[in-house]
Structure formats: structure tokens, C-alpha cells
Length: 531
Ligand SMILES: Cc1cc2nc3c(=O)[nH]c(=O)nc-3n(C[C@H](O)[C@H](O)[C@H](O)COP(=O)(O)OP(=O)(O)OC[C@H]3O[C@@H](n4cnc5c(N)ncnc54)[C@H](O)[C@@H]3O)c2cc1C
Image (cartoon, rainbow, N blue to C red):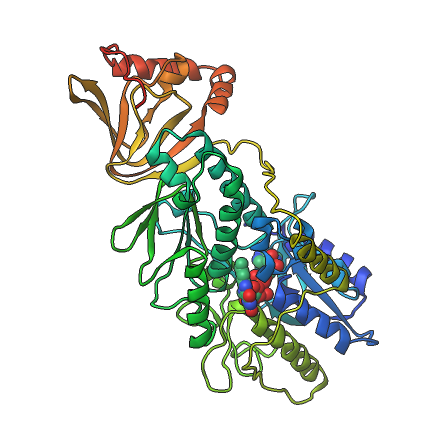
């Protein structure tokens, strides 16, 4: 969080700029450039057209709108990368779009503070009416190993990441044909969460890997496993029981294994661990759950449900606040029968229209209308250009093969956190050293082969490092390290470690002292060749 650099500074400067931009106009400020926010701003543009006493501002983290229901198709490359997104400025011609992360909202002062951009100061804007629509977040905190090893699936970068991960797994499985354990992990793809997003991701991922696997000469189609883990007895709680059963049937028919009444409890680099303790070996784990309240909403002094969604009345107004409205996934919105709306784009777009109508009614002293939407219609991509592009991509898909190019966008991952379960091996004696580890929590034991068994050399705890010897000596690992108590480590790849050791004064020497202090005996036996 960035603190505004004093009221007279940031806020004062902004206020000046605001007045220059909008004079003394009153403002509706929308937070969020997703379904709820964009459709609300569009409806407000229509309703406030021709009025020069009001202006609309929309804050969004990205300068584009993501059509999330089609995001899973980025995995297979069925549609072009930019076809699932639309530039906000093209969709919102009469809204002032501010591409910044909103950091806090001061309800009493009626101001919004956004993160700094190029200039190192917070950006503050005032509002008269506020529309809250920042959605929710996938929050892995509290689930061991998920922050380190599970992929979320919310935005374009997540979709690209998953596509790259799936292709890499196939490439590696094609190479590692003499290691059945690793191959099993590489050829198993696990998705957790049986809501809209999980089901669409698993369907697309399944079709993609099975389709392209035919191009790999050393991969047998029958070795591929695609698993959907869901905590309830039926998937897709958002739709009717008939549709749920239909979707489950189709998924199974296409080869997806449904693991029901089980939750994802933890993850390692090699397995997804379920609530009953079952470990599904995998190197590709996606989790669309748990969906948690947005931290921005969490911090607001506004009424919320037990699961952190903003409580609004039937008119979408936050209880007790005449000028604050909440819609989309961040809000708990009662339907006519009293039950809360499911978090779907279908509902968000309808809520947006009602909120816009009611804001203008509130401005003009008119009467408000209640939100009442039951049926699920068809979703349409915003913008004609995009619809035509998508339609042509789908048509071409009928005749062109699935795209298999793996884009490496991020370069090397650098230092990362990794999580290990008790009994899991970090590395084996004799393996090539490719990274060094710093133990952050938990315990590990260091073992060396002796005769037919293993001899315990030492145990390691928080703050200790291991794996540096093979890197400093450019030799194979001279011991095995195994987790004894669930542990999190900072894992630094060889290249980054080499750069640090070469450039940080004294670093190499201090690692050498650690090695000397440990005084591990020299390797007694040559490492066994890999079996
Ligand atoms: C893969 C997937 C498939 C889905 N399929 C379907 C489907 O088939 N049918 C259906 O009806 N629903 C589907 N959904 C659900 C649907 O997409 C959501 O219900 C809908 O997007 C909710 O809209 P929203 O505007 O509340 O949130 P979002 O669409 O998530 O938008 C939130 C916006 O707020 C922005 N934001 C967040 N924090 C900040 C901040 N601090 N500052 C500035 N901006 C911020 C985000 O960048 C984003 O633009 C799917 C969801 C996913 C992930």
C-alpha cells in the first residue's frame, strides 16, 4: 500500500487536475473493468448522455476488458490471444478510464486512492456516487504449497501460463521416457474447482492435451490423465441439476476423471493432495478456488456477509450508504426469491443496467427499481470487431490443426518458493545440482548411501541452506535431502546463484565456510547410475 504523500500534495494536485479536466462536474466513479464495471459504465454513458453536470470515471488494473468465459480457449489457441480482450477505451467512449490499481477508498472523505504510476505519488480522486465492482480474487493463502505450485485462472497471463506449462509437460514427457514416475506426473493434469471456470478450464485443457499429444512420438494417449477435483457431489452449482448432469456426462465421455466430494488440501511440485490424503501425481495443477473477497473490499468499513461479499439491498445499494453501489462477484445480491445471485457474468451484466438506472434515478430524485433476473441467456462478446474475429477463428479451427507453439514470455522464473511434504525428496545423491535452497520453515534430513541403506548425516532447520556444494564445486549432489517436517524453501536456480556468488562480495566465501563447518565426509561410493 502506498500512502498518499500528504493531502496538500497528491490529493491537492489531483484535485486541481480533476477540476481542470472536469470543472465542477459531479462524478460517478466505477472501480473495476470487468463485466459489472464496464457494463455499468456503458449504461451510465447512455443514461447521462447530453448532461454536462455529471461525468463518469472508471478505474481498472488493465486497459482492457477480459471476456472471462472465453479465457480457457486461450489454452488451446482456438481463438487469438487478443480476441478475448477488448480495449476499455474503445468500449467506453464517454468515460474517463484510469488504468491504475485502486489501493484504498475513504468512505467518509468520498475519495479513491490509486497506486502510483511513473510519478512516485498516490493518485487521489473524489466521487459523488461510487460503484464497487472489483470482482473477487483466488487466494491460496493457508493452503500449504498452493501459492508455490498451483496456477490460478483469472486473467490473460494465467491462461498463457497454463498453456505454456501444459506444452512443457508434454515436451518433457516425450524426452523422459525412461522415468515412469516423472512421466506419470508430467502426463497428469489436475484442475481444482467445479464451478464455471474450473469446468471450462478442464474441458479445454483436456481437449488440447489429448489433441496435440498425437504429435509426440513417445507419448501414448492412454497415459494421459486429466482430473477435475470438486468439493461437492455435483459440478456446476451455478446451473440447473439437468445441465449439471449433462456437463458431467460430456466431461467423462471426453476422458476427464471427476473426483467429487474431495477438496484440494495442499500441493507440492509433484502432487495435488486431497482432503482424504490422496496424492495425485502431477506437474500441472490449476486451482480456480478458493474464491475470496477482494482485499480492497475486505478493508472497507461496509457491511459484508460471512464470506466477505458486500451486502446490498434489492436496488444494489450498499446497506446504509445512499451513494455506494456494489455489483458483480464482490457483492451479495438478493434475487426476488431471497437467494443470493450466483457469481456469473450473466448476472453481473444485468445488475450493471439496474445499478445505472438507479444511480440516475437517485441523482434525479426518481424511484429506484429492484433487481430481478432469473434466467440464463446467452453471453455475447462486447464489440462487433471482436465477434467477427472470434467467429472466423472458430471457422478456421474446423480446418486447421491445433496450435502447439509454446511462447516463453517470462524468461527464467528466478528465485521461487517451493513446498515439500514429509517424506518427499528434494534431490537425490548423484543428481546434477541445478539450484540452491534456503529453508524457511520445517525440517529436512541429509542422507548418504551406505552399503544397501542410508546414513543420516545431519538435519536442517529454518534459516539453513543446502544444495550449494554441487553448485560451487560443479559436482553431482553428494547427499540426498528429504523433508521430515512440512517445509517451505526459497529455491534459487543455478544461474541466479552463480551471478550472486560472482558479484556479491563475500557470498561465495560464506557458503564455503558453511560447507567447511558442516564437514561432510567425502563421497565414499560413486553415485549409482540413474535407473
Ligand atoms: C475462466 C472463467 C470462465 C467463466 N465462465 C463463465 C460463463 O461461461 N458464464 C458466466 O456467466 N460466467 C462465467 N464466469 C464468471 C464470470 O466471468 C464472473 O462472474 C464475472 O467476470 C464477474 O464480473 P465482475 O465484474 O464482478 O468481476 P471481474 O470480471 O473479475 O472484473 C473485476 C475487474 O476489476 C479489476 N480490478 C480488480 N481489482 C482492482 C483494483 N484494485 N484496482 C483496479 N481494478 C481492479 C480487474 O482487473 C477486473 O477488470 C467465468 C469466470 C472465469 C474465471
